[in-house]
Length: 282
Image (cartoon, rainbow, N blue to C red; front, side):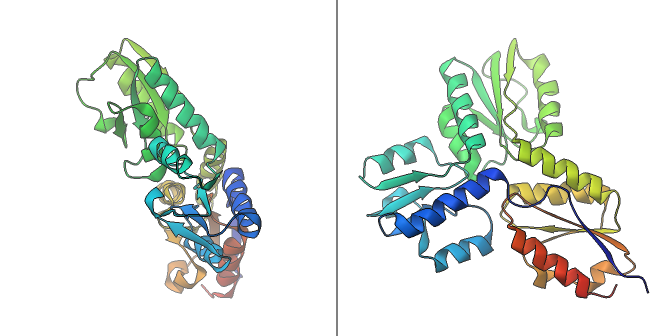
């Protein structure tokens, strides 16, 4: 029987923004005034969060829980009023917001200031989208697809910003549907390059293999999106957080298996999955 051929996507795992946030947090764990806490999980990867906890970095759910020490703003960003609240408490605040997210926040604020109705394309309850909405104004709209748009908009001047992990195809569809509904449409493509690179590489790989394993947190929007895109090309696509979840039956009859991972998945987790696949006899 021939050995299983395992291929890791050309772009997979940690992006620059996540790596930056993790490095800032590890440095804070060593040098910042204790206790050190992140406001919400730093990134959407349970394994990484568990490792940070072992290093003394806790997680708090709100600014009100921050009594002293250091608070780290998560890579997804936090709402503007939360930042203002933390600043008023006299704490050490470390801003680990991904620069791509920070750029989207600034664009949302600029659109609102200039009088546009701001439409945010993204997952309504995702932390990044909640932060964007705080910059976009109370009248802003959050939609998950062009189908969610109301028949009539409150303004003929519309500006768009996008959750950084959305796909270009969804943005293009939204722009196409919005154009006839507006007199003035200004679209800011705030999808980060790392997201596009990982999606493109994952889809390319999915078309060439018999099964795909996507590695990353189930609470990670970009990882879930990778799994969705891969499943469109290869129905035998499986999203796992750990190698222990892999079922040998998934690989029955497979000879080529692709592995990809979300932008919040460290290299070590990818390597463990690859080693587990090597152990399996399809």
